[in-house]
Image 1 (cartoon, one colour):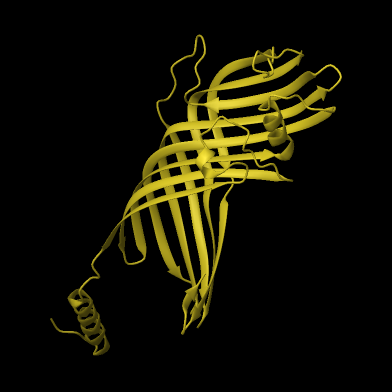
Image 2 (image 1 turned 180 degrees about the vertical axis):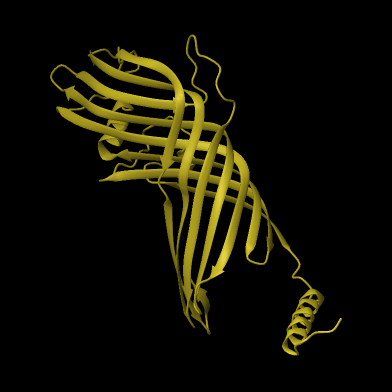
Length: 293
């Protein structure tokens, strides 16, 4: 083949050489990893008592108390900037205010309160479990800056949400409790008469990200995860209001609630937006003593 210009064959030749050189470079082998993670935290009770129904060891403190369980197992394949993972995970988070914990501790005692009390309870529980796929990509933002973005697509096996809110009063003179508490529950395990069939699995779409900076000795990173949505078609839901006044106790001294519960069961598509969880990490590299984080 004859070319009329000298620059064109040079360009084609250089391109072919670059492609050949690139093809000759050995590709970095993929890295496989199997990881198991269990992260548990509890403000109101010792970790050993998380599954206990006893309230005598409740630690009541001001403000809100947090308890959570995060369990995960994953198999990952990393090649270049991409990481693909198959994972199964279970997540549960409980947030309760001081009044709710004080009331639970009081109802767990055999002796009634010695003075009039009023509690405004606020309890928020959310838990789900499922399995799916995660795709993550790492980026070089600047010389000392790195970033990572990820997305999870989960098939949900279980999903439960419960919100409890309302006042509870105690009259020391009559030893009577009065309740006016509202409860909203969404659960894939909720059963009731005439419940219709619903989707056997839900769907979760969750995003994550991390931005990190690394200097000669100091390193800082901020990360967020589980920003997204959960969706389940036709999942059972229960809206109820507990309103009662009681002065009754059983033979062991525990309150008999005698509740008047009004509410309704329903089934509809439920979409919940998840707020992200944030993590801040810092570390300091010391040549003499290693890295502190």
